[in-house]
Length: 112
Length: 112
Image 1 (cartoon, rainbow over the protein chains, first blue to last red):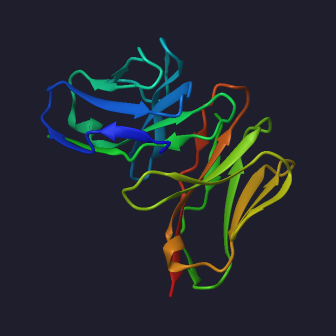
Image 2 (image 1 turned 45 degrees about the horizontal axis):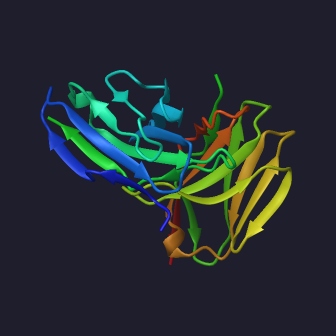
């Protein structure tokens, strides 16, 4: 089954404790992206990647890091999480033949 | 700044009626347009995409695009309670970088 997976689905952590949210897709898509979604603010892009080893900032990159060492994986790293990073996070991917984005199930992160 | 605007709603329609959702965009050079449905706490799922002026039908859903007026709409015929969700409009402004501009969504409630 073609899909985008994210782990963990739910995470409660404390301020300053480094964490990684994994994202993996099995569709051989070149493009991958991370979004956060907050009430009243909609989907905001954090980082995106056009291909392996090619990443760029989105609209709200502060406090986040990403890497793209393999085509299928695009982890999101929070080196020192803060409460304002409490949010619902989505990973998405698309191919260069089509700009339709397919979303993972989401990760609900709470930083205390 | 490139923008996509949607009426936040809630839009309330009776079961069996036609629901009409609208979206306007600011970048006249936009090339592709998407409608996603999102249930509360879940990930966005693609309903339809449209690239050319006119109507595109898929089952109970019809997307309408008018590039001259810079709007795209989604009609849902024979609305069902299961259609109750938030509908997100997304636009690819130009080029090939896959960066979609997202509206904040319209909340639809279909009443039995």
